[in-house]
Structure formats: structure tokens, C-alpha cells
Image (cartoon, rainbow, N blue to C red; front, side, top):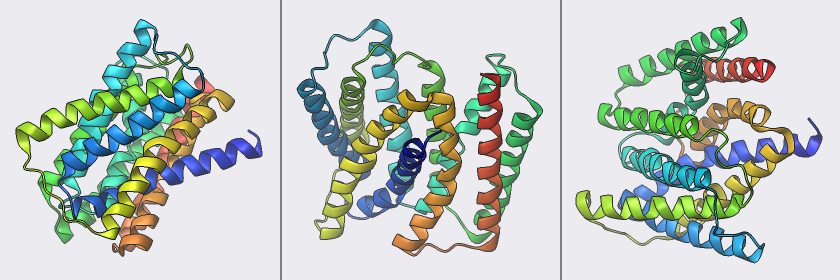
Length: 289
């Protein structure tokens, strides 16, 4: 793995993890489903526009259309929609930690459901991840946490893991940025429907809201996705996914620095254990591949 790939992986992990803190700022001044659907409208139109400027086509393969719809609904609408709602009542660091368990859930599902061979290192990583989650949750629950928000984040990461499994390899065939842009527009439509049914939209204009919304739309929303696909094309999906082990660290650190969220010793220990578990699972899957 060359230095450009390492720097790209670090940049992706940082941008992905920062989205939770910026989302926490957004939902403090705007209704979550309205804000997220607007974000996807902007990011999606930008993605499609850039894709067209680069000569990419609307003519996707059936597998790409399937991936576009599945990801648009499960990842963009269900996963992030539930996280935005949850972050009205729970901390960004906790939401980031729960979302960071996605590689562990994918590893577990490919082993138990799809029959993928799991080496002892990978099995140890899954056990470590469970232990890390227990360490963190025991501290947070004893300190008082909104259980509804916690449940929404849990459902969200399951939806994200399901989307990852359902479309494995389905985005091959080119037109990557077009697929990404259309996924966001699918998410926008799904979230708009949910907003009409479940939400009373509101907004309290502030410079913090404007800054967080612009950052979320452009950086985690679009740039991080472009960097991810560049990384996958450069070093492969399995090796690129190894950088997910940094997400718990970055997610907690950014929330602590930007939002002043508390970081206890038990949290730090749990995050370290989860990160080691994710790294072990990804290295195991890389060797198997």
C-alpha cells in the first residue's frame, strides 16, 4: 500500500467520522428528515452534474440500478435518517461508535449466513468488538442515555450492513459518480416521503447550522464518497475497508474537540477494543480473499 493510498484512507476515515458531529449541530436547529433530504438533494444534484461533466452515462447496468435503489433506501434513508433522528437525544460520539461496528456486523453475517471462511484472527476480532461495545454501553447506560435513540442507531447500522451485503460487487461497470449521485437522489425522495408522513418541518437559522449543513453536504456527503471509490479502485475493497478501524477513534475525538462531549476512561478503552476488533476482522478477510 503506497503513501497516497494511506493518506486517502486516513482522509476518508476522518471525513466519514466527522459527519456525526456535523449532524448533531444540524439537528439542534432543524428537523432531521427535512435537513437530511435537503442535503441529499444538493449532494445528489452535484454528483450527477459532475458525473455528466466527466462523460459518465445515465445508462446503468441492471446490477447498478439495483445497487442504486438499495443503497439509496437502506443506507441514505434508513441508516442516516434514523441516525439524524437519534442524534436529537444522544451524543454524536455514541452514534459514531455504533455506526463503526458495521464491519463487524458484515464480517459476522458473511461467516454465519454466506458461509465465508473466518480465520481465528477474524473470530477473535468479532469477540473483541462485542466486548468493546459492552464496555462502552455499560458506561453510557449507567450514566443515563436515551434508549430510543440508542435503538434507532442500532437499527440504522443493521440497515447499513444489509445494504453492504446485498450489493457486493454490484457497482462495478463504471459510472461510479453517477451511481453515487443517483443513490443520493433516491435517498432524498424516500426521506421526503417520510418527512411528509412523520415530521413537522422546522428550522432555526444560525451560522452554525449553515456551516454544518454546507460541510455535511460537500465533505462527508460527496467528497468522502469520491475518495472511497478512488481508494477501492487503487487498492481493492477489502484492503480499503481496513481503514474503518479508525472510525471509532476519529468519531469520538472529533465530538470531544468540536462539541465538548465527555470522554471517559471506559469509553477510551471500549473504543480501542472495538478498533482492534475491526482491524482483526478486516485483516482476516483480506488474507482469506
